[in-house]
Image (tube, rainbow, N blue to C red; front, side, top):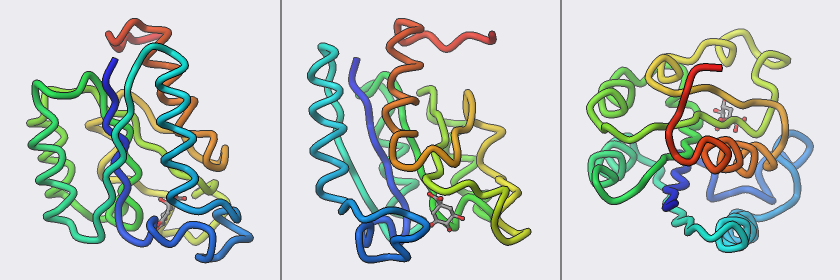
Length: 148
Ligand code: DQA
């Protein structure tokens, strides 16, 4: 399978951004780990990060017919970007939304995702392991998301 690992605003700062919440590992280290995980499963993972809404939308548009699945952490856009929701609906590529932190243990505004309804599912609170968990789901499904 070919995975697009798409991270939104401020996730390039992993390692120095609120490490008590997001951990001490850097964004680069995360990408290397995810690329290795995919390769170990006969797959490929390509990491893309954008701090802008348009950058995320362009990456979702470009994923069509190129990737089998998207693993998306939209960052704060999760909570208000109807444009990313619409892009996911149009993408025709299954997506799992990942949050490193447990958004339900934090501020009220983080509890609601406007983008999750266009996703197969949402993973949060597992730290950066959530990205591997999402890939593991798609690998177990053979790339075809099913309701369980
Ligand atoms: C986040 C949670 C969001 O609320 C926050 O704005 C982020 C990161 C997470 O991975 O836990 O930027 O998506």
